[in-house]
Image 1 (spheres, rainbow, N blue to C red):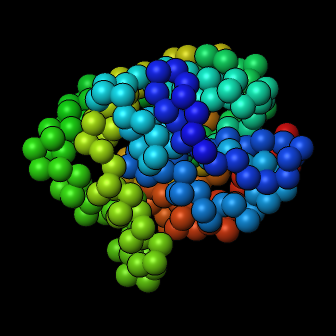
Image 2: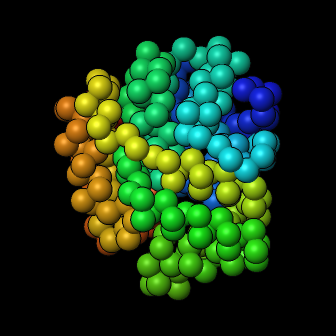
Image 3: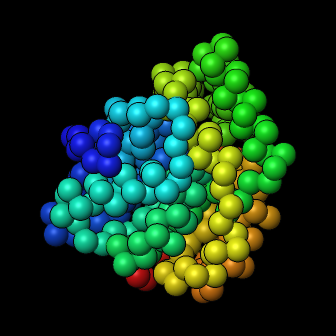
Length: 261
């Protein structure tokens, strides 16, 4: 399904019992709502709203320069369009950055937030790295990012043992538009929320993959320490897409958390 909101077209799916609590799921860079397939059975008691963020999946690509605030506004406008008042929010990677932004911007629309494989600020050196990734995509296309991204997201052994799970993610990476990738890279490069996190007063779960090379457990600890009352779960032997590498552990963490709230 699609909705024209906030100056773009947002693709979404809405599945589950009609009157159940709603879980809104926000995917990583270079993916789509399909990234959450391994969570759907575990969330069968909820109504699950999976969103393709601007520039990704089947959503529109309005230019190549976005902000996290714009993407959060897309999501708020989508909830308005669907006449949904409140959701539990689950975000991974940039999805978790959007979750933090959403929680600071419109906490009254949220019942809880789960922030997985994410961070709360990007240092200057990190911003330069994102500029380099944009330049590579514009020069050589998205295929140039496939192998390096997969290497950061999954262990070699997982790739060898589960090509049926990794190959669809490879395809999502290579089929993401260069403009959509660039726009979201620019949004990530401006991330600077650590000093604001203490204002978040929502039930919060923070999840990290033990071996994530970017959104490390130490980075997750920063978020955990700055959001009062938050919970932290570190999933052993996983990299960035811990929801796919160890879905049973990830699913248990989020369903236990949601059951409490």
